[in-house]
Image 1 (cartoon, rainbow, N blue to C red):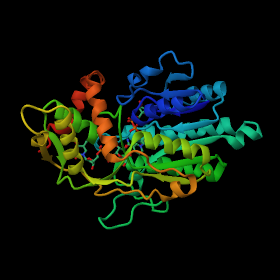
Image 2 (spheres, protein in one colour; image 1 turned 60 degrees about the horizontal axis):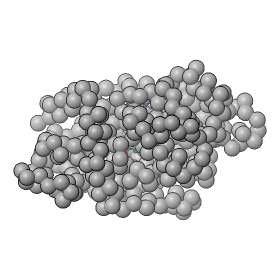
Image 3 (tube, rainbow, N blue to C red; image 1 turned 90 degrees about the vertical axis):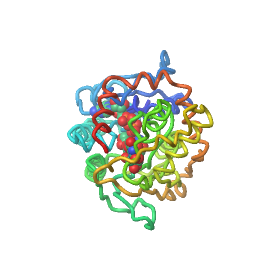
Length: 353
Ligand code: NAD
Ligand code: DAU
């Protein structure tokens, strides 16, 4: 079996669902169920003996050691993290606790387990760190996209915590020879995306007739990838990646935030027209994010050349599927917009001009 951490979050739950849809190999899913973790994402697996959920923290060495000893997974895939940049700006500690110390503790538990395995199992074992393009910092408008050789220049507390984790993963390979793999992916979108992030926030606000808060001039550029393509990239790297290496994963799809928001509005207008008028009337420019990175873009040629992965979903089809999913899952949206969610929205956007 494989051990997935953070498998109740956005990408982790998509990964677990996709994995079990195309493999018989069981998944052990360790998740602390923070505000971002949601077992409803995995409801379709209820009663499936191939999915074993454990409520716990990656930093809890006792729990992790016990799981490793009992289930002897052939691989550990670390998705667990605090993942929202704005939250890292208002409260960085949780990011250091999970993304840095949590990864350290996980690596140590895994190393102790792995080093006592018989030779063949030790050689086949993999630790895969799910990282981000944000560790590379910000690109000038005409600069070439990030390759795996780009130096790490993290700018937000979130990016710095992910960069620290990646350095630990690298060091555990270099020092202890732990067979690690690291993926650095661009912005994902798709089903189960928590509505604090740009695309789902715009969808749920537009449906509720609320303002669509665009930071600054809205000309910041991100490289968007459908979450299913990211999950397939991770499976590919796990299968064929070379230990110690990084693989950049991206959509070849750079877009300015304001254009993303306009496309979301247009799709909603088409699929569920608003008698009050086009949703673009709700676009509101608000105070920019402090230290806001201007542009990310991934050069994904290495993973294509060496491992044969390319994104399959176009942005037009992926965004349409995503908007449709949110329209069809109003109950999921209602469920995640709990008291804690409303408090975050009030704190984050209440004081923004
Ligand atoms: P998310 O915030 O939606 O989910 C994170 C999950 O981790 C949640 O289920 C949460 O309960 C769990 N978790 C948090 N702290 C934990 C802990 N200490 N122990 C165990 N579980 C814990 O995040 P996401 O968007 O799904 O991102 C998953 C991973 O992918 C992260 O490592 C993130 O840095 C990386 N990533 C995300 C994107 C993106 O666009 N969302 C892009 C590239 C990389
Ligand atoms: O690049 C990969 C990263 O993408 C991941 O590592 C992170 O976990 C993930 O959260 C995401 O980070 P971003 O900061 O790029 O995503 P977010 O959805 O928060 O913002 C996308 C862009 O939209 C960014 O330029 C900020 C802007 N934005 C965001 C929000 C929430 C707005 O203009 N208004 C908003 O209300």
